[in-house]
Figure 1 (cartoon, rainbow, N blue to C red):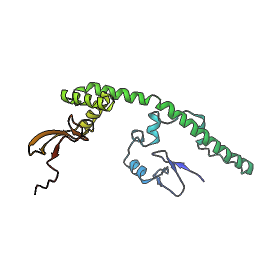
Figure 2 (cartoon, helix red, strand yellow):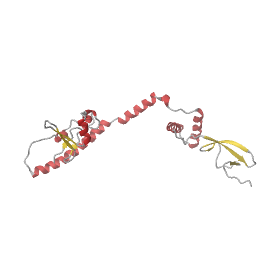
Figure 3 (tube, one colour):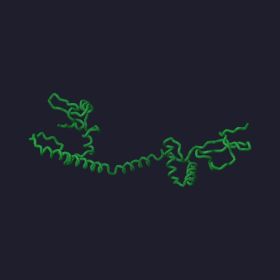
Figure 4 (tube, rainbow, N blue to C red):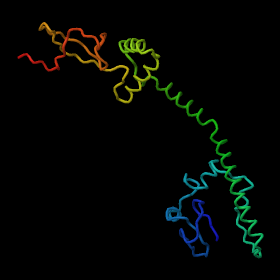
Length: 222
């Protein structure tokens, strides 16, 4: 079974699959799929398309100099059939595939070494250059976060980061919520206006009975 490489992208074109194009001068071009055939007819350069083998080799993303690549070279030399030679060839093909896969993994690790550090450095540079666009906390918000951090026993900087992230995403933060004004009716008939946060009454304990009743509670005065 003869497996040719695609003339455009370099992928293997299996028998009975793909497209074969015969030019007027008798030269044949093998394509693995219609996508490669159409790009070939549009006279596109495969070295400029990122999904082709030619581009990846020029960009240094594929191995170009390796002893295992020489075995894939085409050899149109007729050899008399020998059963032992055929069996040895199959074993050698499996062993060469294993060696090639291992070398490709090593090549990939060396190529990607230091990528994380470069990404972090680029992100820090971007933040430093556009620091004036970052959201800022008001003084009242910083004091509220400091009090909340003292109650929870957590770091203030962590709460500030959560608050800034919530502001940037447009969501409400759990650390610092909005405030709601409510009317409470006292048991003696008086009405008092109080301010509550999303976590409860500011400066009061919800579990304690302070003699107030919420206006939202149902009251039967009859």
